[in-house]
Length: 123
Image (cartoon, rainbow, N blue to C red; front, side, top):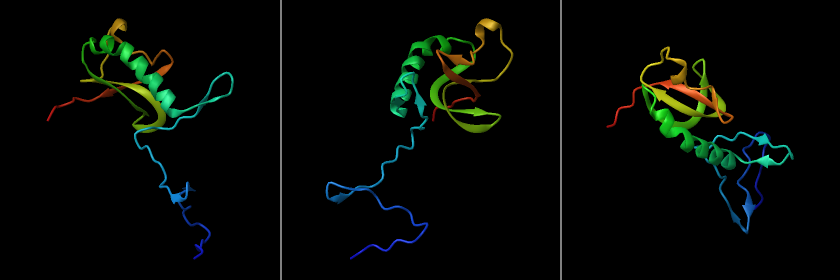
């Protein structure tokens, strides 16, 4: 029995190895395509692993700053709007002016940072 397709139909799942495979979706990964000097594509998983390594290197130092409550990796928000940029997110109790030695840098080892005002409560 032939499948009937109409313009605008959603494509069917890929058929490989003689069986239908569902599309693969990783909602926790944000695909950001970048290219290195040799023009090879760096995958989102490689990028996330690199960001995770940098986050782990600086996490203790950031958590030692007054008012910092948590560190994670996620999308950066600018002006209250979500972007497609992965960032090291630094959660603080309250955004306020601090001495220069306590300021969160705009980026760490080339990875953008995002300072988020939020009090985290354990349930």
